Image (cartoon, rainbow, N blue to C red):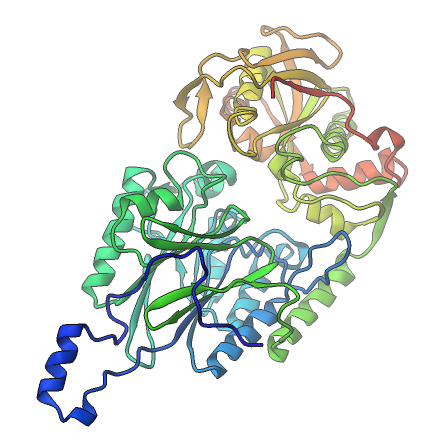
Length: 558
């Protein structure tokens, strides 16, 4: 397959004119004066292609397109695309913008090791650390970092102990033609609250003005080392970012970035910001990004699934072997559902009550009651803990672990009514005023209403968080009932949740306070609760009561 070396119509400016073997008019005239006329032609600018991926989340096996499935490439197609562009005479640099090592059982079962093996086979030059690279803990991240044949970049993640960068901040790639391309990485500060707090407790994430200063320092360093091109490979996003910690804000506040390759939003992006091309490939290998730099001008040429059929045999063999092992291990069927269980992001588990949210929280509540031998009042899961919808049909252990991939522990804590009200107010702050938030609560044993017409009254940010606490809990949230007891701010309720929430993840800092002052009980993994409820609580079949959401959460004022 061939690709035109033309610029998209919406890109209106020339980029990358700081070198690339191009001679200025003055330099060309000087060359003509010093050399015979037949030798005066300037050297051709090198052809460079930066192939990029982001937010693959373990979707490394090809899934064919169908009526209800978008379809995605195999990671082996990335390697083949790299080879094809090299065959066309381009010097190819393959990079990733983060969130590759978590998301699907294929990479979850060994905590990201297989994702790194696939990327090693493809010949990646570098990868930026995404927030989900921290999901398996700091020690595991250090382990897979050593296994990678390429550096994991991030300039704005610092060790608390000494204030030094935890990861390699940047990498300079010198092409065969002698062009120096400087890359640096930036990781979203939202990692502090979207990842298990204990996994990031030893790190500081520079944000807002400190993030801009960090990025500018990287640009200046790379320029000082002779880089003609400076590329930020970020995992920041814009739609789901908090505060100024976005790729667009970086481009508006930092000078000298020639190209910004972004991730985190799961969106297909191609636009100009402050004179710089900003690109993102969406997610899950639905697309592979290519920025072709021809005569100093970048042309973004996103390759959609179905438009390229190449496969690198060596990489595919590695993927097939690992996938067969995982399928054998997790392929056992535990039950079935006659209904689609909605685990989409938006509209879905991050913006409203869904039937999957009802089923999952009921599973956590039921399992806690079985383990404790008594009834409890309620259960809460953050919507971001539920990662996929379930089509009608069989439910295997693989599907269960795809729904809940994080291996969070179920925890039972006691909270006051006031703490519960604050938690719901904080976790619903995005409704009506922002985009989908992973903090949005799915609940069991609780009924409440969100008045989206009332503005969220933001107080100070929670400690070590990018999220604001509510200045007026109860202004947007009305709790009608908890555990069949009505609601009282002074009452104490027994709540089942996960260690992520009870450690203060997302917006649930007050649950952390409750856990630290109380006597929490830690049980098994969340996906085990889901499995047990399906098998033992529901006799292997999702009951009719979950055909639709059950009216636990009402949203008005939208």
